[in-house]
Image (cartoon, rainbow, N blue to C red; front, side):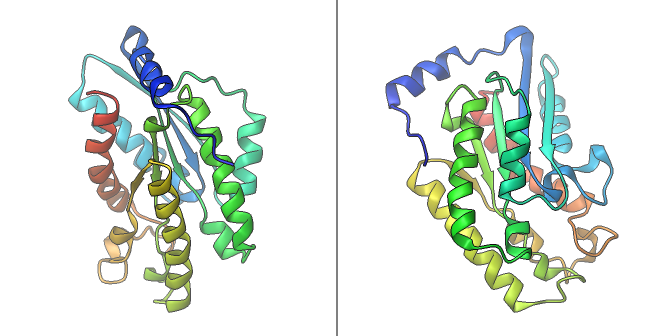
Length: 221
């Protein structure tokens, strides 16, 4: 279940989230879309986000920690987080998960339960301040050569994203819709990596264009 925090407690935590020695730590949780399957390490969206923040804030140092792996479901990500001795000192956390639940045809009820667990775990890493969490929508791989324009895939992904969006709305959590970008993958092949399935470096750059103002505001930059 999602742990809801009182406004006064949250605001107090916000005041105490000072960037020690001008170091800002960002945690990115997810699967292949976060680890950047089929693109270089510096090409994935967490690294591009870090670099974009660094360019605009040269007086600070940005550190990215990524916990993600190709093929991970919500269960895999929960287990990975549990196996990490994560501190609660991150300044921002991103979460992008669910495509492998859909691809493996796991029960949707399992996703809903474990997504809530992951949100709770993510919030804990930013000193229980849910305003420091950004949840990203799931890219639609139906619009890739691999997906081949599958309407079934797109409807499934939409079902997951509608749930994620509504969950975030109900719980006052920031939701960023990157799926729209991926829906042009067939008409704009440059948005798809060489494997014909995952986002390309260019697609990740488009993700960051959406995320940068959101993240900058949350970090007070």
